[in-house]
Image 1 (tube, rainbow, N blue to C red):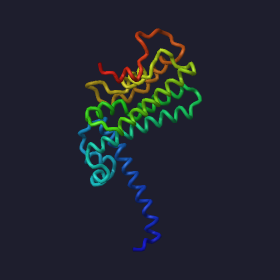
Image 2: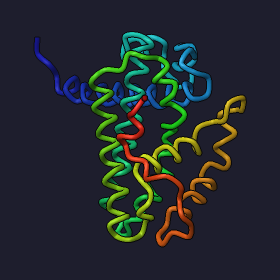
Image 3: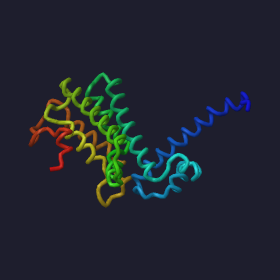
Image 4: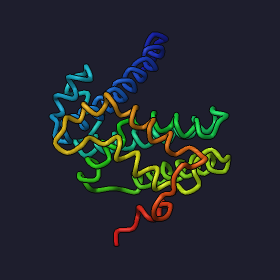
Amino acid sequence: MTVTAAEKATAPRLRADASRNRARIIEVAREAFVEQGLDVPLDEIARRAGVGNATVYRNFADRRDLVHHVALSVMHKTTAHARAAMAEETDAFQAVARFTHAAADERISALCPLISQHGNPDSELEQAGEQLKDTVVELITRAQQAGLLRSDIGAGDYLSTVAQLTRPLPGTDCLSVQGFVHRHLQILLDGMRAPAHSELPGHPVTMEDLRRTD
């Protein structure tokens, strides 16, 4: 069968539309999962994404598959924010600040507990998580080596504190935190600047400390 020039021109456009629809579904699902939990109806996600139900099911085999790709998307985007901050900011502390606010906007701290509760982590998710953690360690280390970030703070201190400040409090509307999360993050960042104005109790928390369960 001969393919016409018009059909050849249409195919890339259709592929682009399908790619945009898939990305839109993932983006909307991320917000819906944070707001309503992982049990939000897929039909509701389709409605909010402006696509038909069939489009959701054509792109994702089931709810677990959609959750998987939402988690991957958030991790990859957050890692990209860290790398962009390091590449584009001449001030190493400003790179940390830029990444901190960008990570909050990705809603990773609100989403991660939901993902962990859903269970079934796989090697792809674990690899994406390790890449993110390694990139954050590099980001923090650069700022410390430049003498701009307190030396008594570990990457584990940073990540756990940011997670606590950006995760909704139990019993509160998860969207209410968005009104002041960046304010609280800026307070945190000011406290992380070198030179330190106080002595922290204990020792710097590393990524290995966060992995320990005993």
